[in-house]
Image (cartoon, rainbow, N blue to C red; front, side):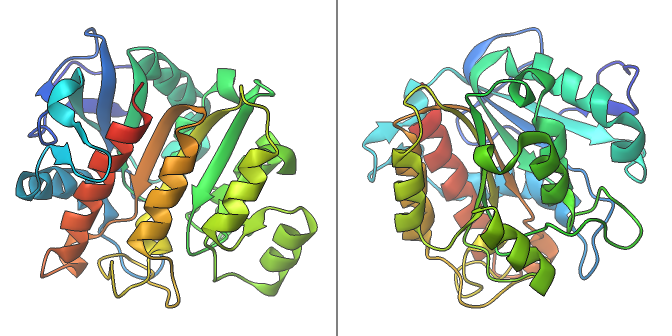
Length: 295
């Protein structure tokens, strides 16, 4: 474990993802993996905090080479920083969000592309850094079964069900899209449709991306529950009638036309995945994201 910092978090070593080498924050790389096992507001079934290490474990069951992209992780200068472990998850976002964002802004400078492994979806708020929020060229693309646009949930404005509302307040509807959502309150869907946030299928994502400037920059947030539960049952709030794996990979392919600064893969619950099928799929998605989006 590394030394403590002002935030109530600590670096904790973890077995590295696939071919990545372990590295401290002082080392620079082309691509990097960072675990953030934050979980404080699970409302149905908890366990996302175990996701980062489980994805790393299941990565040992797949190859470094992707036949879909004809690229190999062995050819990337890829490091795994380990986990930034939240010591006080309850209240961390409310009290330390600004400091977390500034810290992750520094973390992102250590590589051309960063893949964050979560954790509950609220953690995405920490990955949206001050510089990005102020950049008119910066966009947030969310793949999620749920809109997560409630003003607050269970008394918290920083919840897995309301985090996207905070992001919308920061970015505005022009710089944020939510694709694949099929669950939410009536009010959430009215808001999403009125502000043109909601994209149902990859084809709609393609249309929206085509209208953006070519110098657009992105953070991709991938909630594993955007996939149909027949593909990925190991998540806290599975929702039927979801996307296929091919749908998700098509959106990742579309993003290769732009600069993607970072991405996160969240809401994998390994204890709800006794067969390991969701874990293997999460590891494969992580590999494909790293290969496609690392410059």
